Amino acid sequence: MKKILLSLAFVLVYFMPATAADRAIGITLSAAQIDTDLTDDVDSNGSVDTTKSISNDVFYGSIFLEATKGPMTFGIDIIPMAAEFDTRSTTQTSTKAKADGAAPQVSGTNKATADVSKHVTLYLQPQFETPGGLTVFGTLGYVTADVEIDYQSVSSINKIVNESLDGVKVGVGVKRDMGDRFMKFELARTDYDDISLTTGNNTKVTADLDNTQLNLSIGKKF
Image 1 (cartoon, one colour):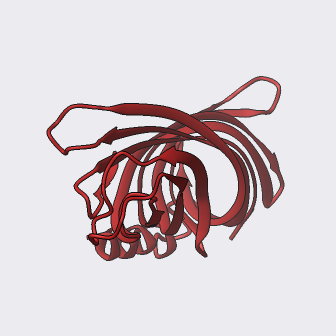
Image 2: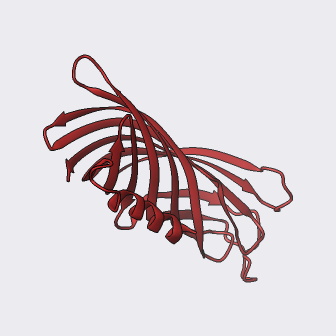
Image 3: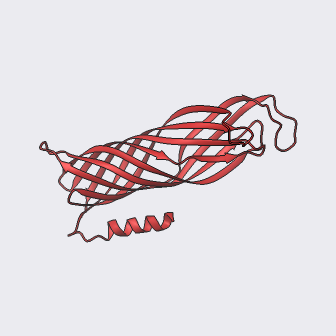
């Protein structure tokens, strides 16, 4: 499904006739805060036993391709490499035996790392020009990515889980045209779907990720 969406977006933007729309390519630099709400269901019985909220600051870059016709821009934004969105460690006193049958550990450190790759955003940006020469725009986008979670637990065997991560992006920003070049500044937020894993000793861990970004984009029309 992801390959189909990516191919369709590329065809729509790149092969759209130049007379029908202004096409552009560029790069975006993002300073982001990843907020994660974690819940543990120790017995996987549907009840939440522990909760924790954490935040992590990350920086990453992406490339975009877009086409503008009238007051509407359609685009695709791709993070071209894997990015470590979050890594967390916490000390825990184990209350459950290890899943491999070994003697339970009294205490230790749980660690989880989330690496995101193939992060693609398809977006629409309705816009209008102000008397001062700036263009104000809104963003509505669909986000899809692959995430690999490396979970190391004191009370269970370590586990690596690969999941598909989908989300919705909304934002607002301003754009300044400079001839055949332009610059955008945007504040946006992406709400990802929940992701979860079940450890070897039947503990279900669920993470709800939100990404708040300040984006600076520089583009060139062609």
